[in-house]
Structures are given as C-alpha cells and as structure tokens.
Length: 96
Image (cartoon, rainbow, N blue to C red; front, side):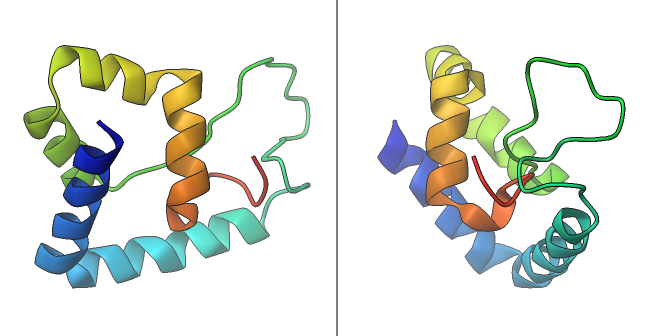
C-alpha cells in the first residue's frame, strides 16, 4: 500500500511537474502564515487537525488508483501521518 502511494506520487511529479512546483510554493506560503508549527489557528478548538493537502490532480490519482481499503487507510490518522512524514512538501504544517 505504501509503495503504491509512493509510486502514485512519483508519477504525479513526473506527469505534472508545473502543477507540483506551483503547489509546493503555495504550501510554503501557507505554512509561513500559521501562528505555530502545528497548523493551529486563532480560536481553533478542534481536536483533529489537517495533516496534509494535495492538489486536485493528485487527489484524483489516489481516488482512481487506490482500492476502498487502501483509501480508507490513507485517509486514517495513521495513513495521514505516514504520508505527511514521507512527503513533507504536502504537509499542512511544519511539524506533525
């Protein structure tokens, strides 16, 4: 499963390099605007927080290439933490 996700990301970067580069630049700007390294927001009382963001194209590639079980794991806290740790450019915050 992890290898499959890794290969999807590699394919995305290869097929859509311009979109990937623009997304990474945007993520850097978003993280710089946060009040702390954990993506907290003023007045945010939520227990859960966003671990990562993906461009729409990459999201669609995951949806098309992962089966239901793989998508469930990917969207879980465990899967999200793994993805954010291994693909730091997609992190929603500087720290996980």
